[in-house]
Length: 95
Image: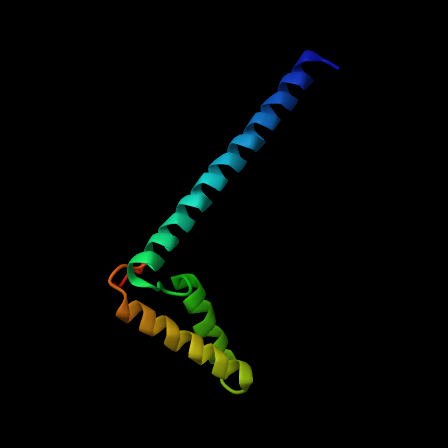
């Protein structure tokens, strides 16, 4: 095997492990933030702004049925969590 091929393989392995380590650290910090919010206030909003927009869009396309009722309950739970909690996990543009 040629030296350039070995160097590319080693560099690829280093990059792969580096990205994986950075992603793991970021995820663990997010989970620490969630845990701190749960310990301090007992709750945080169930889903992100993007997920809320997705649920609202789904409801506009499927306004009837059992799943629609569940989605409305989720949105109500989200609304209560955003209203009742002083600190929020996700960044909300209009908060």
